[in-house]
Length: 289
Image (cartoon, rainbow, N blue to C red; front, side, top):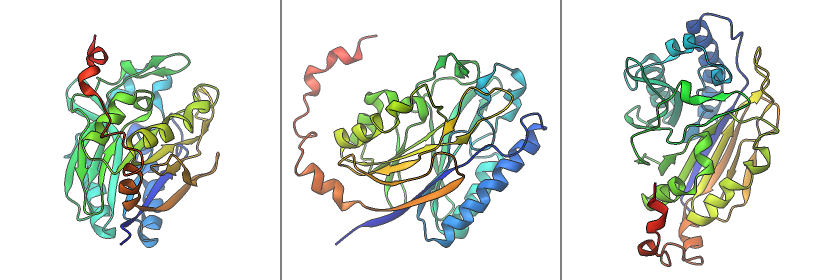
């Protein structure tokens, strides 16, 4: 019997001006995403994920301490509490990526995972933090994640989260598979001319190597005043064979959906026995510092 889960990805441009008060920026972006979340609920989406730091612009394009005030607590902050209400309203699992305050001066790039009944299940903190030109000054804002690679047992599927730059590192992607992930979501903010050629290469490769589904989300548009490049959208789902089964446009705010048959994971793993044939006892070199 098919075990089908309807999933959605929301890609969007930043709402409003980056010069507005931080609370207004958060409100405008949440309002934009609430419309897509309602659309997802009406379409029967069971699991949905937004883009990296969906409550604001990609402020890592500059190094400015004013953005430290954009942090929120998880799960006790306003966005997570609101997403719990939305999840319960639509019986929909929500992956909510925001800028998290752990304690004063200690901040993370984090995604909260909320079950379909509104229960907060936990969070993933981005593990690999870039600090590269042009305009990806993330070490100024984020401490590297310290929660490992958790898999969340939702009502519909066992899911993992990997955030943006994480996707360049196969080690965490493998651990998510070993921890039982059936679908891995990667909320991102990435621009043309930097890693676009890898966008449809690395994540389907993770899907193949680990025989799970991947949902890759990217924002769209050019964000002023920084103009570090075009966020090129093209959010997509790929299956355990690495085949793209649904894809969004390059430059449009939109919700894309796909029906994922989780039985395909077993089907693929019974053909490609990558987990059976692993040789972890020979991989000690991977742990060298």
